[in-house]
Image (cartoon, rainbow, N blue to C red; front, side, top):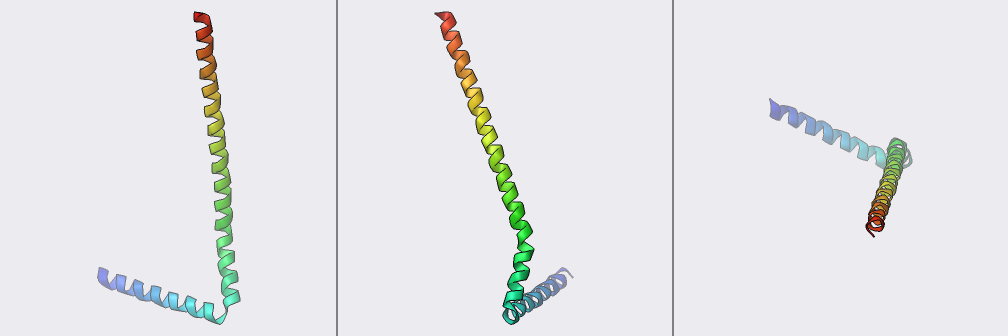
Length: 83
């Protein structure tokens, strides 16, 4: 039974792929327009997530530098108190 389902799924997938190739051959501009319109939201989401990640990395780096500078100042103050 499972093999029958896989076979039908593969046939349907192949038929769909043939349809898409035929559509692209008959109407290339319509095909490209549809593909671009379908992918545009994904590109926008990718750009927004990349920008957000870059901001998070910058904030983390600033926080690490601030903590490191604070530790250096604490160490310097302890050295001055010893002297």
